[in-house]
Length: 329
Image (tube, rainbow, N blue to C red; front, top):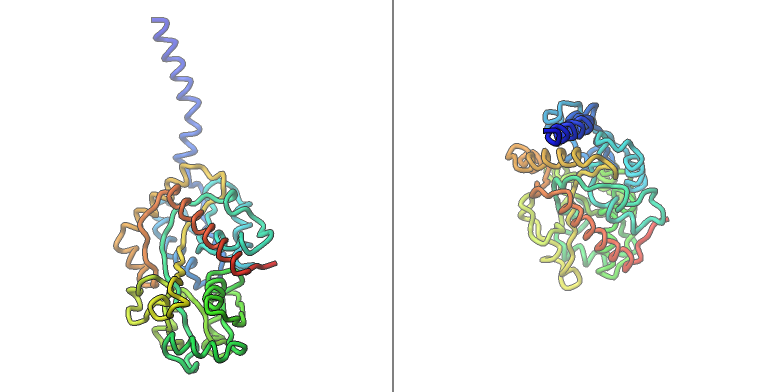
């Protein structure tokens, strides 16, 4: 009987000690959740964050704020998130470039991409589309390649910032052709689109999500998409692989968007966010909302599976950047 009492007493002590931990786990979130975007409004990551805003608010019962913090190819936002409170209330919603490309481009981006962030959930993927100003005298990729070779010193391409997929993707494209085109970086898609429409730059790689309004309005013309297969959103536009000939037979750039938390965020918060985003990715309504922005909803991944993909992409882009001598700073 004494042994039984001692066991019950020890069990009660253990349960009492665990109560604060259980309370903390159940209490999250206790304040508004901020989704930090490393780019200006209109970028693919911004569109995904705004699609998540209301579902996360409903699921967690707290306001969800979208905060755009562009600058330095996304580095400024990542620095801010890495230094934020590790309580699950500040999250990063980003395309892959700041985490998988910037470490290869910047000597000191101000964060450690592997150690400072925890992958939470993948959300959507999208190929890029090669678009041109309407008065450029080409209609097909073959015609564009001929034009680039004949006018290499005069051709300019826009990007949404140094070190982004729109920049490095075009660098890889032009180097595959043995060309050296002039890069004109902008602070976000809107400024780049304005100059492309106005004829001040010639071409750019852009995500379908951010360029779809221009394409629908006929303000720029699509030349090719960068996925291995034609996009269901632009079925009449060929891929670079199928239309680009021998030099571009393996060219592919697909951009994913995901959610990350600063390292040290409670695992329970990471799990709950991952679970809810998984619920949304299985929702026809949410998938349709992404599709309306030309974003393909991904199949849900666990945080650990997403981490594997992020690491593989970082290794791929690091190798590509170094082999093509693309670097910043």
